[in-house]
Image (cartoon, rainbow, N blue to C red; front, side):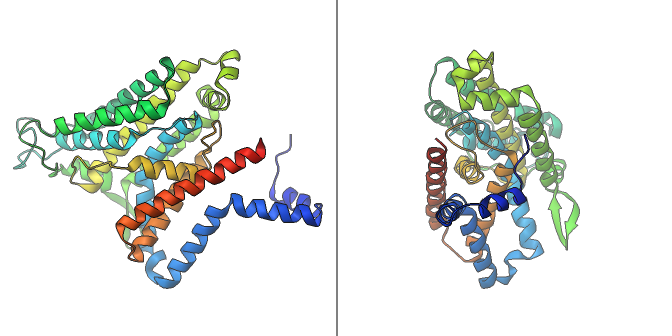
Length: 355
């Protein structure tokens, strides 16, 4: 079947009656209202603050987007299954603190484990991914086997992970303090740079995020697992009748999501340089907002990698813009909540229209 393209859509629009054209324009404006609002916001911010789209600001937006992209890609899969994951931010925080504790410089005065030599970066990366995968496996198993809603399961694991994080920070000589003094091999691996835009260096984790995104695109679009994920999200009973192992698919999606959280935590630990129990707080809210803005639907079975990327980037643009304008941080939470609410309302309206 021929795929619809821009020219075909123009031809179809021209053939509509005046009344149908009015309805078409109305639906277009409603369905794309967030994008239109964000574009207008960018224009207004640029007029008010000409440095907003400077090379330094653009690199900052790209960097912040790259840091948040893996967690958004992970949560997107759970939303496609008509669920969500409230534990994501706390998993990021736990992984960040564990990574920081294992990669502190040998001889650092406040080293959490003074008798432990600085571990190899890739070994700690493996540990970070394993922690994320373990939490994801618990989330997926409880959701699939016990038929519990992911909201309840991940709310529970969010509290459990946070409790484990608080206890972990009391181990050794740390006594609940922030974890800093990271080894140069770690910070260079994450925040070092080999390319600059203008005179602003692009951190290495941007390239890692691009690689992760490419891998996730392949998994979603070119593998049987990806097809099964969308099938289960669309209709789990029909997928089961078609021979899809629904339980295995759900668990696998949550495990993959956990791996993405682990990767995010590993990046975040070196990116911010000083990790506390507050690291990762509310990160899942940004990720969920980005997914919904990018067209990942809570009705299930709908979502694209490019949409997640667009949602993450647009969300970062708007919040960097708010910072440029000097909007209070507390007010930014209000705006973030409104964006999620409006995006979900628009998403549900699209679903009802299709139905």
